[in-house]
Amino acid sequence: MRNFITVEDAGDLNEAYEKAEYVKKHPFADQKLGKNKTMLLVFFNSSLRTRLSTQKAALNLGMNAIVLDINQNSWKLETERGVVMDGDKSEHIMEAIPVMGQYCDIIGVRSFSGLKDKKFDYAETILNQFVELSGRPVVSMEAATRHPLQSFADYITIEEYKKKIRPKVVLTWAPHPRPLPQAVSNSFVEWMKKADYDFVITHPKGYELDPRFTEGCHIEYDQKKAFEGADFIYAKNWSAFSDPNYGKVISTDKSWTVNSEKMELTDDAYFMHCLPVRRNMIVSDEVIESRNSIVIAEAGNRVVSAQTALREILMGL
Ligand code: SN0
Image (cartoon, rainbow, N blue to C red; front, side, top):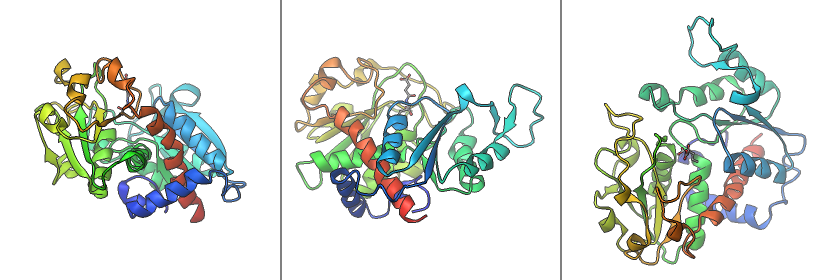
């Protein structure tokens, strides 16, 4: 494995799960793999789980981990070519990235979509510059269109908790006050399709995701109908994808909040969310605190997904 950016980079998912099981059972078995190797984690956006779990994964593999917060401790970076740099940005990404590559063996990047320019976001302009200019394997720590370490952890969690070979997994949109990226949802769709579960997406009209991700998916606009018989409810907010509303909040309809009444419609489903979660917008206190809520185990598996991906990359170095 060279980079870890899309579900394709994970290869066969059954094999990926077996590797994850191995990593979970033997977290310190491969300390020699990372000896004298350095991982650089570059954040253009905030992070709690990704930052901690990816560092932990790197340390478990015997690597050193360095973290750079672009917006706090670094020069402000220009990302567009051709700009006369007479504003507040001191350095161009075209120099900054190859320089970062000089100081590490693997680079992790978090670069959320700006939600202003769909073409710029969906071309993965920033992430691709890291791939092209760093000279190092690149791990997406949530880029503009995908969050593969999260989706891999979600997949591992579903495999661990599922009671049926082919569980019914429902991705439901839920309300949020701010415009959020589509990355977690796009990525989850990509992984669920490849996992071949009974997968249903539910959201209000106008919140259709990029059809390049949802092609062939079962989309149900009636949330209650979608919940019937579900084994896993995966809640997430995202802003609109379709023009002219790209990146906008077009509804904060609280009738979409996941609550106990709706969970009653499921087959005793587990509740999942990538976190951070806005309580009583996305999900009621009652549901997230219930015995069916597996959000903490899901977050715990972020170390496993990161370590499995990093281990594969290290084996190829
Ligand atoms: C990010 C997102 O892509 O939805 C990261 C999730 C892992 N979430 C947020 O930015 C939430 C921010 C908020 O104000 O609730």
